Image (cartoon, rainbow, N blue to C red):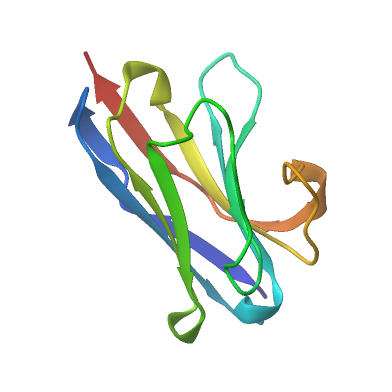
Length: 124
């Protein structure tokens, strides 16, 4: 059974930084597009960022551009999300997910494997 596990969430003050990590098992990590999504209470799930198999192509939601950086290490089966200049509106549960193919803006419907999420809370 494929497992996707996020880590690195926590409580941080506005303007601070966090780095999320996501590891997978029983998944050919290098063969999958990987993405980060988030969902705040009472809001719809939002695609934050995704990255192609090789890492050459990335997508960022407008709300996180120039603040977040997605990267991957295929040798370690690990996906990262470096989050800088965090804002209270970034507070959400962050999910890692895997998809078999890439589409512009990385729609969630493409992603078949999901983690349980890691909570990010940004205080003002």
